[in-house]
Image (cartoon, rainbow, N blue to C red):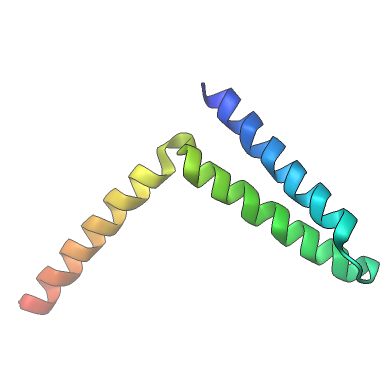
Length: 76
């Protein structure tokens, strides 16, 4: 299932970048920066939505732990 999630995330990234590439009318260096940023953002968003490597769950646990530690420091 993990490989399928990576393939879906990669396919969505390619479709987003390909569509934007056809409609983008800027110089080549600017287009490279915009397309690379868009590709990265869309891939990360799909990984977040598909919960690849349980990252979202681990991040949520880490933020909860950090929040608890921070609350305990301010009380004492």
